[in-house]
Image (cartoon, rainbow, N blue to C red; front, side, top):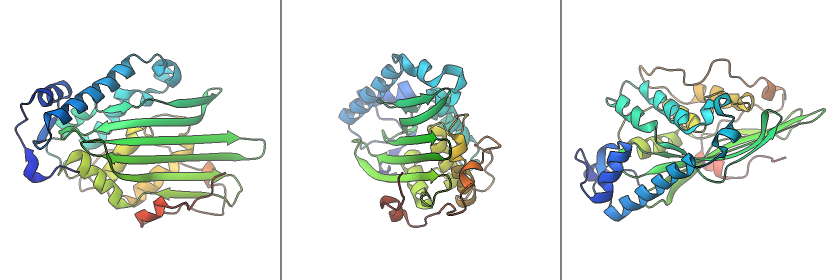
Amino acid sequence: MPIQQKDASASPPQTTFAAKSINKWGLVAPFDHSITDAQWEVYYQQRSKLEEDFNNTAWKDEEFKGEEHPGMRRFALGRDVGKSLLGCPSVANREELANVLEGSVYFLPNWQIIWDCDDPREIDGKFRVYSPLGTTVYVDLHYEYYQRTGWSFVAASCKLQVDVRDVSGESEMTKVLFNMNYKEKSHRQARRVAAKGTYTKIGKHLLGSAKVSEWKLFCMMMSAVGLTQHLEPHEWVGWVHRVGARRYKKGRNETGDDFPKGVDDKESNKSSYSPEEELEDESDLDSDLYYPF
């Protein structure tokens, strides 16, 4: 569960693996003193393993094409997540948090990308974002993308799902942040975006009591999976940015565009049948309301 104020402290715990974790990743207050050293050990071992796997994985440059897709590299993703937070003047220690977040985004195993010449045809990517606080909690993100182009049609789909996980790694909340199924000139299409409260819960889980707007949390989750950097599927997910900018409220005096200019979804608007649907009821996202093709 999100850290409770009664368990929070400005002083870091002194147990063995708590101290090792805090020193290695620069975790900041508040610290949850209800976490046992055995739980800290699991956290330390799992996170260290993710770093080791990433550093030893040969495909990281070949699959993501090195400098051609900088947003798909781990530290570039973390830097963009932190960059969003820097635009939140209400967060007093935003620079400290942003610095920790730069190293808090990870690729999870079992990635898959199928290329069509120089463009991705299918992406099945999993990411993890650890809290910069001394709470050991994190969120897992699963991004799926599909595109097929024929002589007379274009079919595409994209989906981002979040799992909010507690100290033990158990899922506290699973929600779809966005979902789109599109087929040109077809009546079988639908678009969904998450309810505002979903981002509020994510913010409390990762950042505790820090006052970060729905818009900034939305941008942070999009950044964590590379959707604020150059990537070919961007033409098909531009609608997420447009709807998010209209729907999720930005906090007072918050700055930063967070998304590159010029992103739109002109191609995905060609069908006149169905505009994007913005759901106020989170439960709608858990039902099978779209038409897969």
